[in-house]
Length: 459
Ligand SMILES: Cc1cc2nc3c(=O)[nH]c(=O)nc-3n(C[C@H](O)[C@H](O)[C@H](O)COP(=O)(O)OP(=O)(O)OC[C@H]3O[C@@H](n4cnc5c(N)ncnc54)[C@H](O)[C@@H]3O)c2cc1C
Image (cartoon, rainbow, N blue to C red):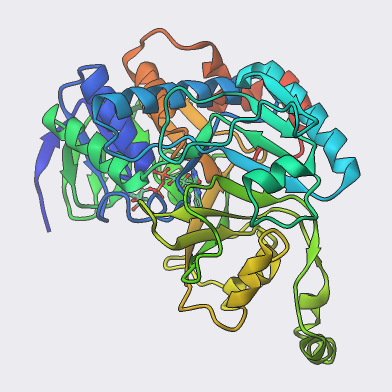
């Protein structure tokens, strides 16, 4: 129990990557003197250490706000990598989408032209292995790499570059300003700089937010502590709306549970240095005839014979020639209240592996022989249109930075910068309006929302 009373220029609720980036930008970049980060947990231990740690500037419309936000976030990540001797292991291997379907090739071309036109970089089309100038990715470099995307429609180029991929792939879209980093190291680096600039960390839960005459006056903690402040920033991840309710502000967000597996490729099926790779066709899980008959006879298991959606993907994990692969497949996500710790379907690793063999046939060697795959994950806190909330709320002095869904690591730098610009009243970038909570008061935006495919921006 603590009855301490203290004062702060700003209180940030939540020490995940969003709260840490907000603290860094307020203290280090905007020079705010006394910023307090409040969290009962160790920093980065709820959702931010469960991610696949990838980034991309390849985002669908409508409008260019997501592409601009991510391009800027990647600019800031690259600056930080230069300044820190790449402390957090940024690479630029890209994302590779593969298909065996003719009709998908034209869809690739059309969507790539659109996204390229939004500012994600040039589209290069490679139709013939003999004349193609396709540049395979470099494993570790993040500088001097192509941007935009390469659409490869000659299967010979795919086989030459990635010989372990199924020979059914007839086209590949390789988006280039994409890759991954160590989120934990990024969080540590930002928090260290923020602490040097005066940010303090309080291990407690925000229990209440005191509002006087319509504006933030302070925060009460579950250990009895009180902090007087006129700026409160909600970075509570999956608990974003729960914390916002303390202000009487309802946020249009919900949560989905996303899982991933870490699989040891001890037979060396996938070579080192490859990009994130995604099989973009619906599939049926690979079963033997005997297994198929058993499943068909069991009403509770029969669904495992159904068609599964496209999107199973993997990326190598760890430095150097680490044999670990991270693999994900969002075939069964739905809205749910966050419960911690979450529980996952024990069948998930088996299902992901039996889907992944369509992309990498050699992985069939692990069916029945996976060595203790690690299964974990966390909640995506999202808006329906899968765009973040960054900016003021209807209560003066109360801000939100969240609903960062499956992109909270990649958006952390530009999101934290934007949040800090709102708090100190600095000039805002052009994309600021696209992420304000007040966008839902705009009838034109609501009309646009009705037309958006809610899953289109999500990976
Ligand atoms: C399986 C998976 C894969 C992903 N892959 C990627 C990826 O490849 N790239 C990418 O960019 N993103 C990815 N993400 C998403 C990314 O991890 C999240 O968007 C991001 O970590 C969210 O960060 P956050 O700081 O907003 O929330 P969190 O990390 O959840 O932090 C919120 C913090 O708020 C604290 N808190 C809550 N309530 C209170 C309270 N009342 N008082 C004090 N503190 C409180 C919590 O304790 C927690 O520490 C993935 C996520 C998952 C689950």
